[in-house]
Structures are given as structure tokens and as C-alpha cells.
Amino acid sequence: MFDQFALHERLLKAVAELKFVEPTPVQVAAIPPALEGRDLRVTAQTGSGKTAAFVLPMLNRLIGDAVVRTDVRALILLPTRELAQQTLKEVERFSQFTFIKSAMITGGEDFKVQAAVLRKVPDILIGTPGRMIEHLNAGTLILKDVEMLILDEADRMLDMGFAEDVQRLVGECAKRQQTLLFSATSGGSALREMTASVLRDPLHLQLNRISELSEGTRQQIITAEDTAHKEKLVHWLLANETYKKAVIFTNTRVQADRLYGRLVAEGVKAFVLHGDKDQKDRKLAIDRVKEGGVKVLVATDVAARGLDIEGLDLVINFDMPRSGDEYVHRIGRTGRAGAEGLAISLICHNDWNLMSSIERYLKQRFEHRVVKGLKGSYMGPKNLKASGKAAGPKKKKDDKKKDDKKKAKPTAKRPKNAKREQPSPVVSQDGMAPLKRKKPTAE
Image 1 (cartoon, rainbow, N blue to C red):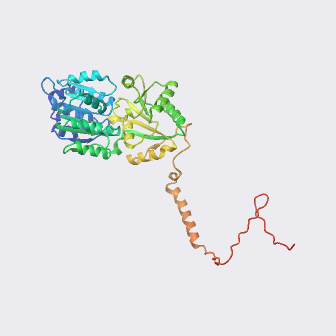
Image 2 (spheres, one colour):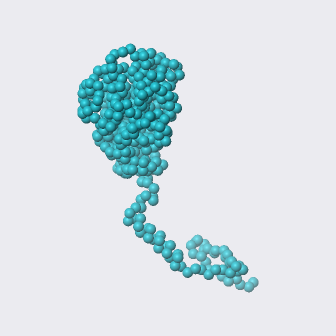
Image 3 (cartoon, rainbow, N blue to C red):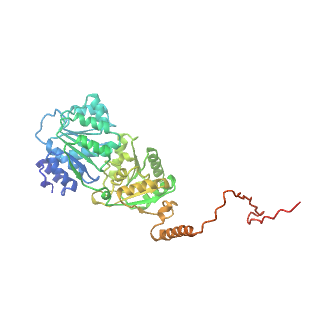
């Protein structure tokens, strides 16, 4: 129960109103030390409830009587607009019985309207690094009195090239008293460097292992010949799989638009989501899928993080993601909160090595699946097909050949001064059997 935490009664009232009963493992682990003021470095699976794990301690720090706000008191940085919107919604839900006000600043919105919002000085500011920097440069954003800083999906922000922007924003929050850093993966050296420079004596909480990220999701691969073959497989899967909602990931915007056009032409109700879409179109796409008016969303990795759609139970990787972390974030859209899901990756021959590296990263083996009538001819490298007993006899045969060579008698060596005969071969007219050379006769 949430009353086990030392939360303000107004927050407990909101939790009860929202029918939150049992805290998730990440909430049990992170909320108590966060309430004590510790800096935290938390690795937690997408869909594990980590938003509440940092929102509740933040609100508990800021809660109080209604006063005139003069400075932003808490800053939440995230990689995408969609994730920022969802986080703002959660903050507003948990703070509904308080006087705490929050606002969101992201790209794709009117800059002057955002400047007007900032003049009202919200207690909590949520946003993406790029637009935050723009307001910082314009003098419309002041962060010198921020008390609490939260970096959510920090690994993704680094992947998207926001490292310098994040570091500058962190530097602007020089007076902060607490910093929480959350990510879905352990990340690489860049994330470790950021952790070391941003956090002060942090408590590290590892709430999941990579191999457990997709525990509730079946993972399959289907081999394909080319892009056209993949398109046929997608159409078959959407027509024959049982699912409530599906998302199909591509690596490029061009491919996303192409696939979306093919699906619509075949009568599939779908939306497409990628970086070229303006905020209005992106919001419409997500809302229509959430409401159930559309069952299929075609998206690039811009939607792999922060896409929280209830009932999303099918993920198709039209293109194999470029890294294990990206794969984790894609399939993390399904099988959430203990629900079952299905993730299918379509593999051409040039995707095989990438797929194998992701298997090694996850320490898992994907289930190989064949769609009747659409079977791909490529089934993996030939040397992978021989295994177990099948590989045994071949090995013995090779060894026998080596032994026979060792036992063979050495041939007599030709004397150094002896001339080597190099007779030209005489071949029959039919090209089959060599003819015997006749001895020359006297003329």
C-alpha cells in the first residue's frame, strides 16, 4: 500500500482517487530514498511505474500552502514531446489536491505562447532539452533556483545528441538540492560520465536485467527476401494475428510513409508517426490509436520512448533496430505491467548479423517462425545449420582425411639437376578421355 511511504496526506488522497493500490517494485525501491533527499541513479524497465517513482517524491518536496511563485522549483528533462505530455498528465493527476502548478515546454509549439507560460513561473517545468536551450538563450527561462532536477530516459537523450544541451541545463541548476536520473537501460560510457558529473553520492538501483526486459512478451523472427516481401508479411500479420492495437517500427521516415501508404491502400486503418510530422498530427495519431479508432500505428524510433498506449499488444519491427537498447525500447511498448504481448522482427539476409548481436545482448534466442505461403528462402548462415549429431560425422570425416595424408608414403624427390618434363596434354575431340601419346617416327 502507498501509505507505507511518508507522503503528504494530499498526495495519498490523490493516489487513492486514482485507484493506485500496490506500488510497483521500482516505486518501493526508489520512493523512500528519494523522500530522504538522496540522489538516485535508477535503471528500470519501461512501463514499470517509474514516473510515479519520481513524481511523488518531487511533489512531496514542493507541497505547501499557496504562495506567489517567483522561480521554477523543479525541472524534468525528457527526450520527446510525447513523453513530456504523458509526464505532465501524471504530474497534474498526482498534484490535483495541491496548489502546485506545472507546465510543459517542447519543440513544435508557439515560442511566444511558451514565453507567456514561463512568465507565470510554474513550480514544475517539464520539457525537452532543445527547446529549453532556446528559451534559455532568449532570456525567457531562469533556472538558478531549481531545487530538484529529474533526468528521465537519460540514455535516450544522449542517443539523440542532447548531451551538451543537458549538461548546460544541469549547470544552470547549480543550486539544486537533489537530482534523480532514470533510464531504461544501463547505457554506455557517455551515460556513466553523465552520472558521475551530475549526481552527488548517488544510490544506484538496478530494477531489471536486460534479459528480463521482455519477460511478458513472445519474441519471434520471420525471414524475408526484400522490402516487398516484408510488406506482404506485414499485411498478412495484421490480417491474421489477434491483437487490439499494433505498432510497426521502421528505421527511416521514408519507409514509414511508404508502408503507411501501402496499408491505407489495402484498407487498413492506420496512422504514421515520425519526426517530420508537426505536433498537431502527432497528437492526433496517438489520440486516435489510444481511443481505438485506429488499431495500427507506423512509426520511427521517435515513438519508441514515451509511447504509452493501453492495449498495445503487437509490435512489428519492419526494420531491425540498430542496437540492443533500441530493440528493448521498441518491444517495451507491449507486454507492459504483466500483460502478454508479441514482438515480431522481419529479417532479410543482411539483417541476420544485427539480429544475432541483439540476441547476444539480451542473452535470449528468438523464436523462428514461418508464414505458410510467404516463406523466406534465407534461413541463416549455412554453418549455423549443422549442429549436434549432424556436425559430428563431418568432423570425423575431415579428421580421417588428415590421418590418411599423414600415413601416405612420401614421394621420391627429383634430383636438382634433372630436367622436369612438361608434356602438353593431348585431349580427345569429345573432350573426355586423354589420348595416348605416340612415339615419334623417323622421317
